[in-house]
Length: 265
Image (cartoon, rainbow, N blue to C red; front, top):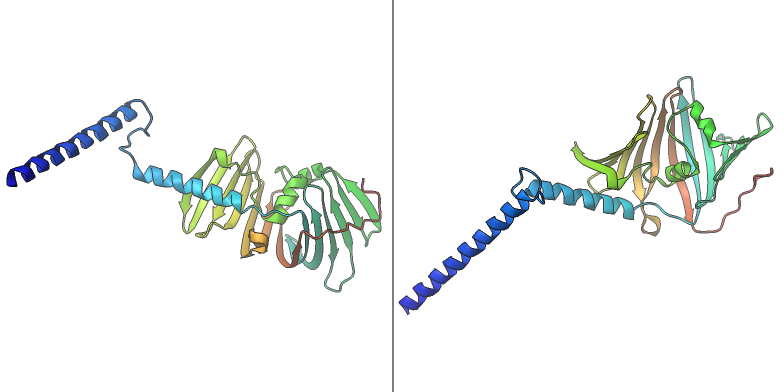
C-alpha cells in the first residue's frame, strides 16, 4: 500500500510539473507573438482595468434615458456675468422630432414659447411681440461646440454628449470613474459615481477656450431608466452663462401636443 501511494504521488507531481511547463510555454509564446501586453506576465491589473471599462461602458449605454413622448415642468435659474433670473418652464417632446417649451416668470405670465425641430429653432417673444426662426448655427456666436437638435435632446435626457466609447480611455479621479474620448474637434469626459450614474460631463473644444459643464444629481428611475432631476448646465466661452434646473411632474410616453401659433414647418 505504501508503494502504491508513493507511485500515485510521483504521478501527481509529474502531472503538476507538466501543467506548469505547458502554462509557462503558452505564456512565453503569446508574449513573443505580441498577443499579451508588452512587459506583462498576464497582468492582472491591466485585465481588471480593461474589464472595469467595459462594464462601465455597458452600464452607461444601458442607462441612456429613452422616451417616445416626454412631458415635465421645471424651475430654472439663469445666471450670467450681469444678473440672474428665475423662471418656470413646461417642456414637451417627441423623440427625434420636436422639443417644445414655454417660459414664465414666477408670476405665471408666459413670456416666451420655443420650439426646437431638427433644422430650426422657433421663438415667440411675448415681451417684444416678435416671432423668429433661427438655425442652430446661431450658437456659434456663443460657443465653438457644435449644437444641433440632438445635442438639445441629449441635454434634456441627461445622456452623454459627443462621447465615443470605442475610442475612449478610463481613469480614476477621487471617487469618480472618468471616461474620456477625443477627436480633432472635441474632448468629452464623463464622470461616473460609484453606482455608475453620471455625476458630471465636460465637453471641451480642441480649437478654442469653449466648454460645456454639466452636473447631474438626484436620480430617480421611471420605466427602468435613470433620470437626473437636479442639474447645473454651464456654458463657458465668449459669454459665460449657467442654468440651475430642477425637474418635477415628469410624465413619459403619453401623446403631447405642440401648440405654436406660427408656421413651424
